[in-house]
Length: 393
Image (cartoon, one colour):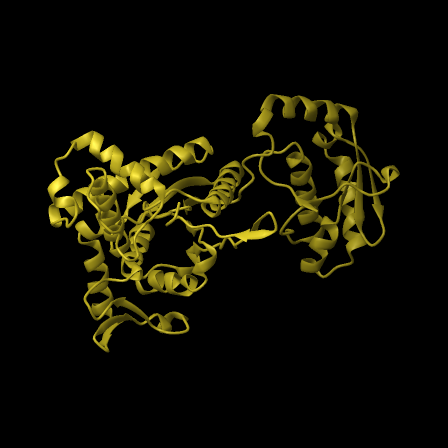
């Protein structure tokens, strides 16, 4: 069943049916469905619009259908497309279309080309779509590619429907995993000069890290040789920041090859350096949505439907991912889009309630946030399931 709107070739027919149904029933139908009837001798299009209108008018649908059929025959503009109309069954309208309508429809479709059928969203919305958002600590694997394909297809479909879609990649370039990545790059850089430096215990062993180290040596030579084995703050900042920039450039190049593009790459680090993370936490404390317990700072997400409260700042003073998510989603909500969509990975089921809680606590409509989750699939090679790992490349 197709509910026709927008500028499709069927729109004039749907509009006429809707107007006549409203006049006959005294109540406007919420939609004008159009089908292709199964037996070809029953016409070219069939519509149960009379039955849809009858539910609101509380009248017999066949009575309404007969009134619509009579009125359609009297509409001057309907002669351009209507060759005949019959009432069938409990109140179906079977329409036979004129050869002139088919010729005009074919011309319109040819002129519109790839835009045929577009612009049917009613109302059109401003949508901020975030997807992929893999940490810049390793190359994307097939799981990220699957999410990229889904997010890109979703964005294209929404834009085709007539929505205004902005695509955003959230770059997780702050925190413990970035420090570990920087230490891994520093160790591989030191190895280029013959130094035997072990990776951190939870480091990144993939060969791609050696490639980043080689690129850095080409840029700066041996400028950081003495500090690579045990980097100080300045050296670690260089290996972390420049290393993640090169990694992100590689990610963007692979996405471009995949024909997946973004309007914005939004940096988590900018949220921290701009004070937005602390501002978001302070706002939660002022409103009573954050509290101290067991040495940590907690977000009272259970107040907004989450199964339990969540830690914002650990007892060691380090913020959790949620602390950044608070700032990021309050920033997104404040931009004024009608709808926010976060495409999440399969391990993020627990994020749905807490992210909606962020919007609710910030005074925004939590229902404006949608969180589709891309599930895991198993890849089998020679009868053995293969595990995808960004850390190992």
